[in-house]
Amino acid sequence: MLDLIFMGPPGAGKGTQASRICAERGIAHISTGDMLRAQVADGTELGLQAKEIMNRGDLVPDAIIIGMIRDRLSHPDTEAGFVLDGFPRTLAQAQALDEMLGSIDRTIDCVPVFEVDLEVLVDRLSGRRVCHEAQHVYHVRFNPPATEGVCDIDGSELYQRDDDSEDVVRARYQKQWVEAAGPVLDYYDGRGLVVRIDASLSREQVDAEIDQVIEGLGEAAA
Image 1: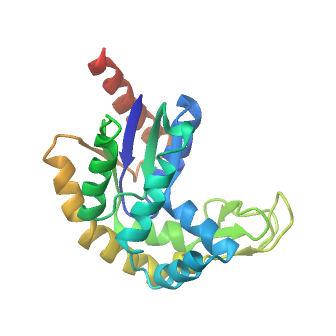
Image 2: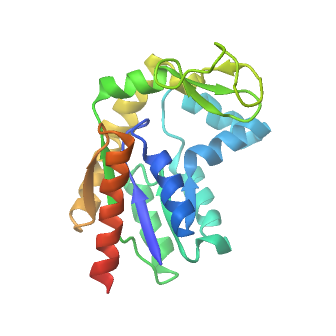
């Protein structure tokens, strides 16, 4: 069993790493961002509320997020372990998570923190484009489509998510990372769980760093 929390500012690459690690190790990837975007796409009442909040760069209220996570942790695919991506983002969420896990005799093994400069994040996210059909991801400089504005895979139009605009990226970094995440980092740092990853490195170097961290956990458990 491997229970991890990936932390870092929006755009640091924690979602990419979480998807890879979970696929390779057969554990659940729990992304609050993906869960909320699904609600928005489905036009649910929660989705409509969340869209307005996220477009301002603000945090969705703790009660909503905690309820979503509590339900998700009850699914059988989490039994072998999970990576939490985008949760917890506040101290209240971290404390609620401890209560949830304690009730099922589990605890967080490690909190890798993906660190990257704000200007690098602005460049990464403001240049990101996704397709309408299936949300395939491109970047105007780093991974452009063969035909500008058109998805290579399904031919649908590419667009910029509202929360990828430069103003929202900067607002999210300040509100969600600098202000809200500070107490959460201190909380886990005080328990010796935080490991810092240089997310400004190449994808291959970040892969190697996080793999080394996880392998070290296995060796320590043995």
